[in-house]
Each structure stands twice: as C-alpha cells, then as structure tokens.
Length: 415
Image 1 (cartoon, rainbow, N blue to C red):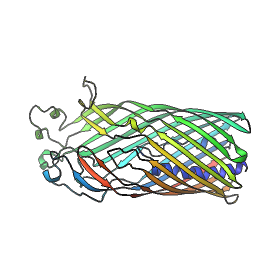
Image 2: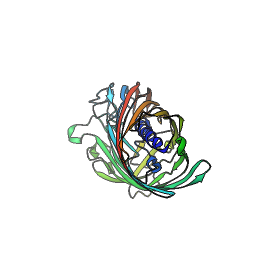
Image 3: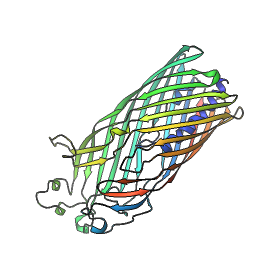
Image 4: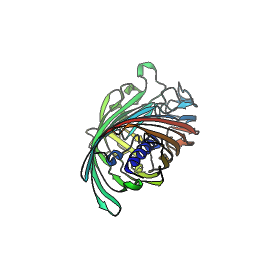
C-alpha cells in the first residue's frame, strides 16, 4: 500500500468524518477542530470545504409549568403544544492552506467550530423559554509539526495557536399576556466575546501501510469579559410594582457582561491499511461541555459579584461532557476514485434540559482525483436523533426519534 493510496483513501475518509462530526456532535459543536490537511504529503496543499446539515428535531407534549408567567392557562396566546420544529438547517465552511519544507509542515485555516440555531418561534406554549437562539463562531488557526524517523515510520510532534470569536443572541417571551400599549413582552440578549487557545499533539505514520495514529489536545478558549446588551424595550416598567429592582432594566437597553470559556477537547484518531486497496479508520473524541451550566450576565458597573443571585439574566444549559466515537472503512476503486463509509455514535450532552440526546449516524464519502494536482470530494450522512424529555423552571416537553442529514463537498489543490 503506497503513499498515493494513502492520500486518496484518507481524503475520502476525512470528508466522511467531517460530515459525521457536523451532524452528530453535541453541545455547541458545529465543525469542531480539524487539522487533517496538515498530514497531506504534498509540499503545498489548499482546501475549501462546505458542509450542509439538516437536523429535524420536533418538540411534543409541551407543558407550561410556571402559572405566573402569563402563558398557558393563566395567560393569552398560549400557542402550539406539539409538532414544534426546534432546529434550523445550517452550513459550515472551512478553508485551509498547508506548506511543507523538509521535516516541517505548517497549516493556516479558518473554521467555525461552534454554533447553534434553535428557532421554535413565538407561537408555541414555551415561548417564555425560547423564541430564537443563534450562536456563531470564527476561528483563525496556525498549526505546525516537526517529523523525524522512528522505527519503520515517522514520529511527528505538532502544536499551534488559534484566535476565536464567538457571538450570538437569544430572544424569549419575558412577560406574556400584555396589552399592546405595554409592549410585546419579548426580551433579547446579544453577546460577543473573543479569546486565544492553543493545541498540542503527537502522531506516528508508516506510509507504506497507510498507518497513521494521532492524539491532539485543544485547549479551552477563555472569552474573558463577554460583552453584550439586554434589550427589554418591549416590556414597560409599569408591569412591575413600585420598588421592584427590575424596573431599572425594563423598558430600556442595558449593557451586561459575563464570563465563560469555550471547552477544551482531546481527540485520538487511527487509520491503517488492512488489505490491498482497503483502509480502516476510527476516532474517539472528548469535549468538556460540562463547564457549561448556568451562565450569569450582570449589569455593567454593578459592584457585586456576578452570580445567579445578582444577575440580570442567565443562560441555562446544564450540559455534561460530550463523547463521539467513529469507525469505518475506505476502499480504492482505481487511480481516480476512492470511497469510504462509517458509523458514529455521539453521547448527547443534555441532562435534564434541552434536546441533545444520543445520536447515531451513517456516513459515506467519495474522492475523485482527475489529476495529481486536483481532488474533489463529496459525501453525505443520515442519522437518528434519539428520543428524550426536558424540564426546567418554565416548561416541560418530550421529543421522539428524529432525522438528521448532512451533505458535504470540498476541493483540494496540491502540488
């Protein structure tokens, strides 16, 4: 099994695993981190990838369990209780450029590792929990490695840094059942933060048998003081009794701040030739999503420590750590075509809150190499978002087994 086979097979399997990771991962993960381009044996390589994901999670049997919030039987305009589409489709881009000289390889890339699009709208009984939540990220990274001979193959040490921007918003119905002259009752929280992280890892390769094993750690990204605004202009202070401290923020836009780090992660990948023109591959990834519990945001200038007792608002996530396990095989059909198929399991990060249950995904991909300098890759994934239930201080609901699908394509130019 030669290095040409290694390139073609790993190209197909790399695409497949990207589609799986995008469709199945929990927490706020979208594309995650991917440095496979660093291992391309070409001296120079560039790659553009896009992955389209369609999660179709629906909420059922929604119950309003807070009788004082103006929804449900105690308020007006309660809305739907079943068949509420909670998720939206999204696209993940990735751009990378790799250069090698002797034992040193370096790569720069742009990606969107984190994100969320949850938009059940206002016309459901749980509008006081969420109307629309959107989170996006931008990650700019540089990673280098140094390799040297070790036994029958080469050992590689790698490291890098990345700069990350995270921003988003959440809208929900704060006070329901208001007459029009007092406002719509909807509040909006806008946030943004930035920080720097680093990665380190090792890898071992034997190109003759298409073997590669790698272990990579990506650090947390401390976003520092996350800045934002709490817009409550659609809720008149007149809905509150005199002396209520919330009158200071109702009816206006207030600057708020909070603290949170994006999670660190560890990923082990292995792949090896198992027969002429056949490759097996697998991976295990852990992400520290349990650091995302209840995130408080307090009024800028408030001298008190920012806690759940002093905050103006908060985001409740209550995640647990995420685990993703993937395994599959690749095959070279001829000098131009190769393909791969895989199965993945992602342990859901939801505990008592949210819809992120376990996910099972089947994925397939193909690589077409019309010339030694160009490689086209495409693939798809279908999966099951398993059933479960959620309850918080406002609402409770169930969700059945739902469908998730993904399509991915990329262009690689190398020389």
